[in-house]
Image 1 (cartoon, one colour):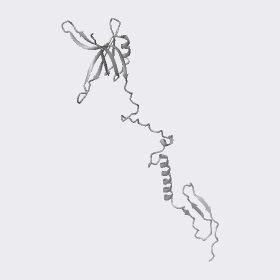
Image 2 (image 1 turned 120 degrees about the vertical axis):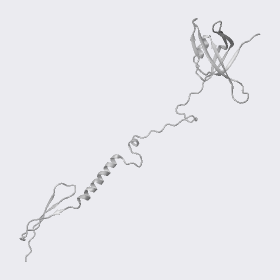
Image 3 (image 1 turned 30 degrees about the vertical axis):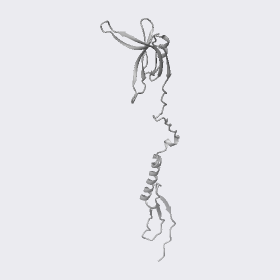
Image 4 (image 1 turned 90 degrees about the vertical axis):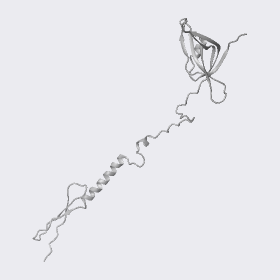
Amino acid sequence: MDRNEVILVGRLPEAVRIRSLQSGSTLGTWRMIVRRRHHGRGTRVDTIPCASFEPEVTVTVAEWLPDDMVEVVGSLRRRWWGSDGTKSSGYEVEVRSAKRLERPAAPVPGDDGSGTAIAPASPRPVRSLLLPPRGEASPAGADRQSEKEAGKEAGKEAGPAVTSASALPEDGSSVPRVAMAHSPGKTGPRRETQKPQKARGG
């Protein structure tokens, strides 16, 4: 008894193509990459074209994604195409049942490729964002320090309080003396009145 049955298990390299025919039916076509048995070094594969006219199969394979591992069951068919003078032929598997076996796991967001997820940075308090880095003075602190240094320099330039007094007249009469005192940081002279002194006798 003749038997034409093909079972393929392999990887889907690209999305399935679905198109509508003039007859109203749909046709699904795709390829499968099937690895051969290992014989020596390296791995050899076969790329096998598949097709299906079954509505249930076309609905199933339309949901497949690249890199899915799938299994199909069908028969080997020889197709002819082209004009009478330039006809060509090829073989494909006409699938009557199909199912997906597994789908590769989606990459984890933040994975660096080594299998260890990168932990997100811990949130910083708002105050730490306002403070300057270590070893640098804040602008406000620098301004206050500059004001203090400027005040010290002004005090050095002003020097001690200057006192000026009026001299006694040449005739020896006693008159009040007024002292003019200047204090740093204050405007206007300060008047101090001293009591008159008695003239010494000869």
